Length: 293
Length: 298
Image 1: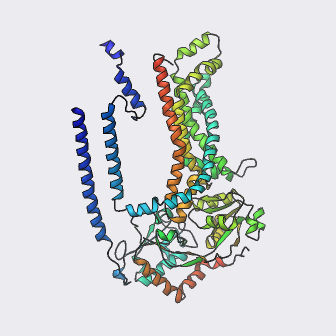
Image 2 (image 1 turned 60 degrees about the vertical axis):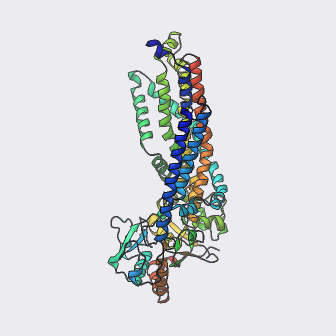
Image 3 (image 1 turned 180 degrees about the vertical axis):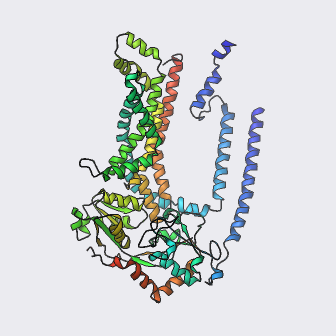
């Protein structure tokens, strides 16, 4: 009984790996499997295409959404505006990684002395994750400059960036915290017994393990951030989504939305694939090391 | 053996599915063909192609702003009330309704956000009147009525700021300008002013006005009547710097209809009557008189 549970037969491992890769791998299923997969994919696609193109509204949708002239005509302007999305994403990311780590560490501090800091970190996480991002951006982007304080920047891109950093740090801090809590307490005990201070134990022993474990979920949040840079457009800043709205409103057609979507996808899909690959690699390493890493 | 059976089963299922879909699409086409055959040229009230018979359903955005709409706000309408008959667009809408034979009680107003006015699909209004500029590209997707107002763009600035001393279009180049999404003002900024700083486009009037108040933008480009409303009510200590010279071919507002709606012919007939008997001019003087006194930027 017990040995059955411990031993893992090869097909089981293969199946698991296939599931990890999102079911995209067909190895072990042979030529028959490939044939069935191809046929069912073809039938599926044909069914969708037929259902869509035969719908009553299709001629209108084709004219307003899938006009190639619209899509390609709006693409250069949107691509130019998209540079701003990428910039915002790259800059915010750096600040999020740092701020979130500080919050996560504050929240995992133990002992009654640190209660106020812990409470502050919890309140922050709750608020950052609780308020819709679009509201945070609108409140900061129009509200902070309205104070007319000297030395406070008026730039809407700046305040939108602050908003994204605040919101995403709330999420990323939770990811870090999950990583920190997944490190067994014996690791800290061992580090302390070797003479490391509490901070040294955190810095040299706990965080390196914790962060490595949470890289995939961290990347997941980055993908979300890439998309949410489109919210900056609500402040009037011309980024890819706002530019596509300008084009849509000028022509009353939606091809520009597709052009913008294509740009976002071109940015997010490589990162999504990288995340999957890292997860798979991590899994393989752990299996090779006998379940520990 | 098992393999071929499974494959065959799948193929059969696929064929059945395709057959069903093919049958389905055949019937859709038939019903589509019988749908849009009625075309009326008669403009008597009973023959009009309406969303709900006996009622003229007119769309506009909420909040409805002066000077286009007037009266005191009554829910669900904010800032103004289109049902009041006050304000230029409300007055024109009721004048058109009267020409078509509708009493005031037979007119219903519907909240139609600008984005929705041109969205594909069946429209739930007879026409939308919301300061929408005609353009050939837009007219490929919806039908426009003839002009009910020939419009000029203008720029609003904060008094005492550097831009406030500009007197020409070219003097606006170094400044950060803003416009409202869906207006032709952005196109105007890009094509005519060609500023050195990236202009901004705000999804709502509120955002554009707030940015001007905060001095996050130097100037806001809007249509002239709206410009006077912004300076009078929305942004204290601001002024209409000037209006832009009329573009070749001009710019005008038209009511928006579902593409192919026969009603547009009747509304155009009504508008032409209102134009020739002087009603449109009189309504402009009544509601948009203030919008004529701005200097023209050369």
